[in-house]
Length: 281
Ligand code: SAM
Image (cartoon, rainbow, N blue to C red; front, side, top):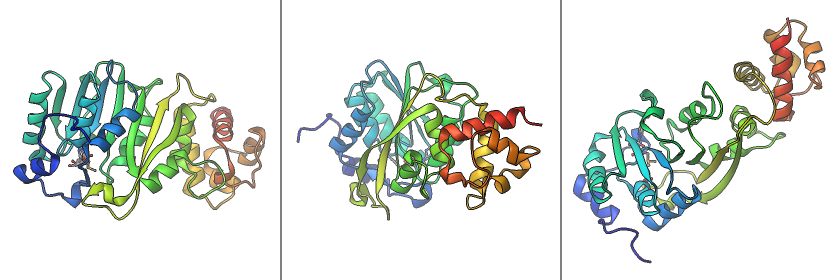
C-alpha cells in the first residue's frame, strides 16, 4: 500500500527516539499508518476543522489526521519523550500541528481551538472515561466540539452505545445518548497495537445534537442517573429515596414504576424523572 506521507515509518521513529511503551501512561501505539488514516476518515471531512487529539504518542494518528487533510491539529501529550518525534511531524506540515506538552486533565483546551472542532483520539485507557464524561457534561450545549471519534477498550465502547435492558447500560449510555448520537464505527483486535493490550478495542463516533433529545436540567439529570445506577440492583423507590420527598409519587408522576430498576429506564424516562425531581419538594 502507498505511504501516507514522506516521514519515516513509526517503528523507526520509536527506535530513534527511544519510545519504549510505558504501561502507566496507557501506551498502546498504532503503527499502521493506513489504519490511522482510516480512523481519521471516520471523523469525516476535516479540511475545515480544527482537530483536538489527546495522547498523540509517536504520532501515528496525528499523521493520519494531517494526511487526510485536517485544517489544523492540536495535540496534547503528557510524555515528554514523545515531543521531539512530534516536532518532526509539525515541521513536515508547517502551521498545521500544534503540540502541547502536559496532562489533558489539567488543561482547558477549548480556547486553543478555532471552531468547528472535532476531537479524534486513541485515548489512554486510564483517563479515557474521565475525559469523555467531561466532554459530555459541559456548562452549556452545544459543546465546543461537533463530534468525538474515540478509541476505547471495547467494553467501554459498548457501555457508551448500550440500550436499556442489559448490564452495559448505565451512566455513560445516558450521558452520551441524551444529547448525542453514538455508534461503534470500528472494532480492532489487540494485535492492531504495539504492545497489544489484553482486550479488544473499538472506535466510537459521537456526534453532538443541536439540542437535547428530551428537556432536563443537566445537573439534576446527573444526580438522578448517579443515584439510580449507584445502586443499580435496587428498585428506583429505594435508590432515589434521598433525592426528593415522597419519591414514590414523584416516580409515578414521571410515568415510571417505583419498583423498576435503573437498567430498565430509557433516557426519556430519566429526563422525565429529572424534571419531576427538579420541581418536587
Ligand atoms: N495516539 C497514539 C497512537 O494511536 O499510537 C498513542 C495512543 S496511546 C493509547 C495513549 C497516549 O496518551 C500515549 O502517548 C500517552 O503518553 C498519552 N497520555 C497518557 N495520559 C495522558 C494525559 N493525561 N494527557 C495527555 N496524554 C496522555
